Image (cartoon, rainbow, N blue to C red; front, side, top):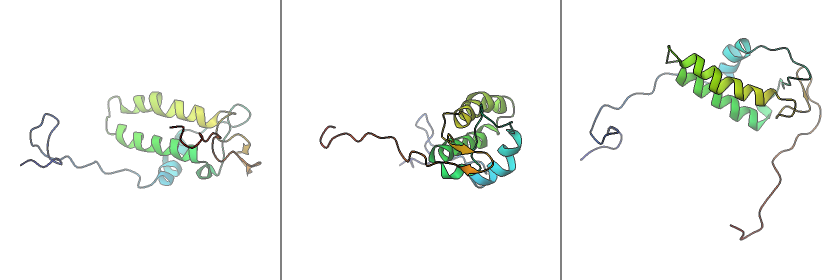
Length: 129
């Protein structure tokens, strides 16, 4: 009988690969020790940032995706960094730092200046789905 944890993609039994060890244990460690240094930008009207980014659910979700994709792609020394920059970092940071993005209304020095929307409006009527 085969163990689904050790079954290879072709249906044969094989070795279970251990997940590679993370370079950073947490999102905040990766942000502070890596991203904040690598992606330094002038901030102003065309780029918005919140020093309390962890209070923005979309920012946490995007930055977590960036951290996890970086941890995976850093292991591919040939193309991993370039793929990560092109396919992950640049599009996510453009969305995060957009003047109309999740940090709209925030100031990179003072943090939040006005309340933000807590969720998108739109609850379907009961029984619609």
